[in-house]
Picture 1 (cartoon, rainbow, N blue to C red):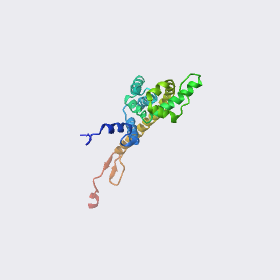
Picture 2: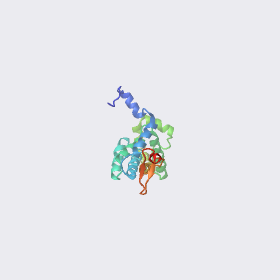
Picture 3: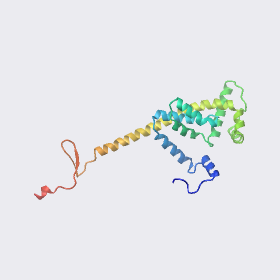
Picture 4: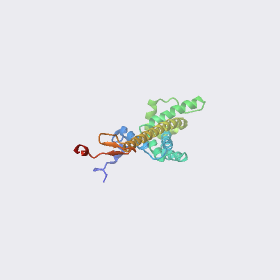
Length: 216
């Protein structure tokens, strides 16, 4: 019933994964709406989403989802929120995340006198190497990537937790206030010319004008 009239080819399906049909703005708006309306406490949702974002900085791309779900389970985070959080790591952000891991890890290891390889690679040099041989480059600078990923992952966790907790809590407070206002309007409808209130405070709506007194 809801299938496409024309099935998409394999190349179109791959392209939609790399670049959504309606753009990243529409995808981001959809994710925000889904996360805000998830069942569960704001804390559990924020914890799950934070783990999803944090593990996206790990150099072990194939383990992001499994690591995020395991950490969410251990900390009682929302699993579905973790799944949406991992969307932060995608083919467009991985090169930037990996370079940030590499740069920060290199700086920290040099600061403490540790021996490292491929120090001083710029962003313009790192990206072509990463796109050409991601596995070989990751193995060459794995120590820097792990150190940088741990630090950046912790920063991303706390930042994501705060943003998601604020967004979910604020939306639920706004929704509760809106529902309460709607209930008040139903219980206390606005008075008009055809509305009467008796001595007990009961509101009644007149069906029409009373001509009985004038006829007499």
